[in-house]
Length: 305
Image (cartoon, rainbow, N blue to C red; front, side, top):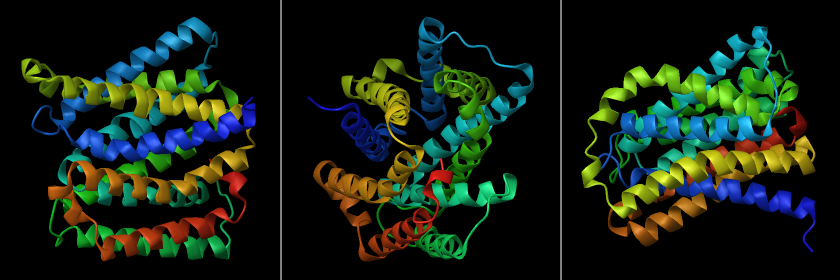
């Protein structure tokens, strides 16, 4: 029989695999079938409904009035901006580039934790931040000259997406300690949906749904159900059975998992177009980012959520 601890480890591996595949899958239908703003509208609306259903059915918890401002900020950075920047970025650039740039998120969390929460940054952390930063900058600048589907503007959007998500993690830290994760997620997606709708609703109502194929619906379903809803629940399950330091360490394994998975999928399913995006410069950038994050993770991992 598989123990709960083993199940928790498998859940974390599954969540990282889902995130890694999302770079290829989400890009596959944009912008031919659906525009990034319309995709954001559907994802936020779908996940808002799913999380509120779970909350109303299983989680009977009220939020104090003083915490709604923090939840609103989480909805802005973790919902609205995070989703819009990601989908606009992945629409313009290579999935390989996006997967590498996203690996800077744990380092960005460290920076925001220092600025906002006044957490101490050691010399190892400074070294790790510097190395990872060099790798991310090289990749972003290289996207302006590279062949294939790389894009400077797309890479920049993905980087700002990582910044937005990192800021959200820091702001949400005290909320996650105070309330059930489903409660926090429900309000974050609701506020994110409200804030993002004015920018995305027009594209959504003008989407040609009659042109959608089975593949289109499956892709949207994957992004809503797996990348957002189930991946989040996997992380919640893992947190119940593993120490925070162990759970957070999986964040630093994601650079390797994401890059390998995205590279394999790109080679198998989109070889003619995306094989050009795998080269030594990008591999070297990935190694730099992964090395930087690894150095950071070796010091007091439990403080990084």
